[in-house]
Amino acid sequence: MLYQQFIVQMRKVVINSNAKVNIGLKVLKKKDNGYHDIVTVFQEIDLSDTITITKKPHGCYFNSNVDWLKNDEDNLCIAAYKLMEKNYGIGGINIDLNKKIPAGSGLGGGSSNAASVMKGVRKLYSLDIPNNELEHLAINIGADVPFFINGSMQLGEGVGEKLTLLKNKVSGKYLIIMPDIVIDTSWAYSQFKNGLDTFGSSINFASLLNKKTTNFNKLKLIENDFESIVIPAYPEIGEIKEKLCALGAEYASLSGSGSTVFGIFNDNALLEKASSYFTPKYNTFISSPI
Image (cartoon, rainbow, N blue to C red; front, side):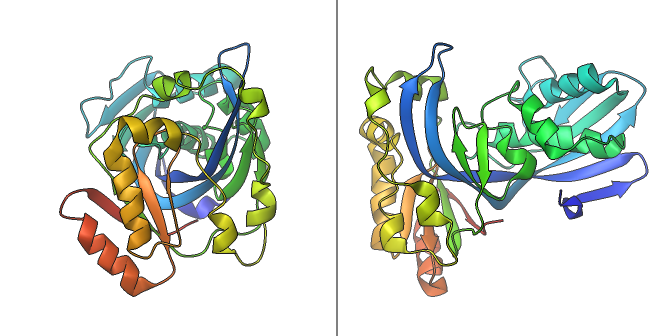
């Protein structure tokens, strides 16, 4: 557990709730519970929301800088608190969220927020809970939430909850492009039809990425299956990906099922040129892998 991300001041914890990108995503068969098995590589990046948690006697109050997040049962931050309260008998908290990661972007903002609340509550109430226990609890909130307990770079299997820490991150800077498009995850998964149990990847993501140096030619073999669904429906996303490659990205991809496209650059001059190209039209960020 890397506690340096926490700033603790008596009864308050401030947490950087980081985003992620998916480097490749293979969609496999649909399970009886309606979820799909997947194979993906999660990479944590330093684009983040900020969450401030303070103690109170009981209950949970939520406040945010965005009006689309409410103080109700659908809020993953509140779901995370209630899960911790149920399992560990803690007191109450106030949650103040400064939101920067857009909804529906494929960057895992909501899942990251939930995991951050769980870790923040653990710190605030001095609970002796190992990360693997938090991961087992986190799957009750959402498939991506367990990844954010440890973050960094991990292979995700099952519905994303079977995690294997990978030794090395993909080097370079990540140019994050966010078009003004919100893609519903349930819709995206619904577009995959039967027969995906034989659609699995012959490419071993872990073997390509778990090395001291990354071969970007091999990295280009890692694809996101959602591109075959999302790009025909939203051609602008495909155009962004093509332009990133044309401007010098070593690798470019859709992240998750959302609308965000990212490019990985190893040349700072090309990165700045690409950023200058996209910034007037889109919300863009330059991020580093964690």
